Image 1: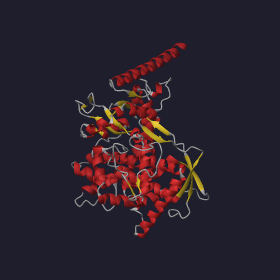
Image 2: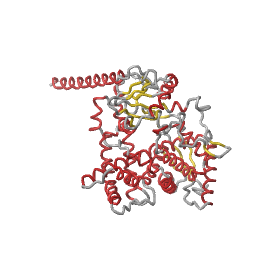
Image 3: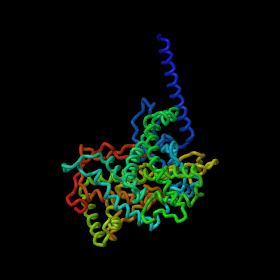
Image 4: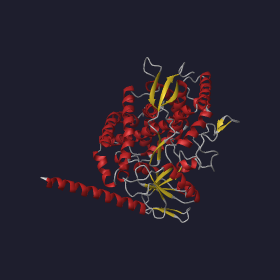
Length: 530
């Protein structure tokens, strides 16, 4: 009777050893492929799940040291990104050459698809998404955007932050509550003001779960041994939940998208252009770039792809902005005097808008330069990623960067990036870089933020720099400032439990606020006015 048991145990042990050996060989090959390039990581060939004797690894300190030792000396180094693969961090001396290379050879979207594991369930590699954002960055569209943002940033606060009836305050998880509000705003900006209320509510609820599931699945796969990664996608509870939520979102969104597609393709094209909708802009850009679908199958394929792209927009508008606003609240609670300064500025700006007849405050951000400086400083110190400028080499013959000595050849499939967090903390770029200065970028002589929050440079890489700068930075920075301003005017906050949010949670090349931090929230008297 014992023989079958021993046989089963022996088979399980053999399978485990096969997984360990395969994972070790894969890790060894990946490290060996980097050649002479220094590697900054835990020093193991094994995936995190198999490192039973791993030493503590301070990723942020290690990357900062590598920046000083390698990047500032004109040398590249390599580090693991979110999905566990290696990317080469180029030194500043190579950035100009790399940024001059077209997206057909070095692609951000293809890099995103890989390191975030999006290729498993989404097609995000179409340039239409970027071209759409460029299109809405025009003055007429941005005017509509600011108008809708001003309305939506007020509408979605009370359901999240107001205390229950009969209570004068409530206790909330900061990151979770802020992300709930930013997600509702993102849905409204995506679908536009004419969308049915029930659809807005359902899409927001589904997208919140979907966005969290995306991060959880990528983290789970990054921890898993190489041979097990495909099994995680097919059999894990996290992946099943993601597929289920995605199917539900598609079931609600695709009919709406098909309806808008039909309107856009009609002879008179009555697709609403009087108000902002990122989905409408995406549809119009898509139809301008390709032949119109003529069969039901083609119509469904286009609608399905538009749905996937819309969900990526939602993630980018909701999660990073929610992360930044969370850090803004942390800083406001750590330094009440800074919060009071910003409250006074926003209050004066609101009065200026009201006196000018701008009752919805769409021009609010034009009159808050201190808030703009404060927000730029938050991006400098607490950006969501330790690296920026991710690109994937697409050309079969690879690319050679001659600005480095010796020249660096990037084979097809090589991922590159730029150290951003370390550059933001470089004393050669900023005085007292470890100290948060809310007025670092505020010019008292002109009462402006200089440089502006959307201005990139080699010393400010929150949105990359140069030819490949993030086109969504105009919307993202507006959402963060408007949401924070509305929160500042409507509520008072203080930390609960002694955790002041100063410790970041590192995840590969990403850095997130601690989700365990909680706050107590009170409604201000004369909400929105005091």
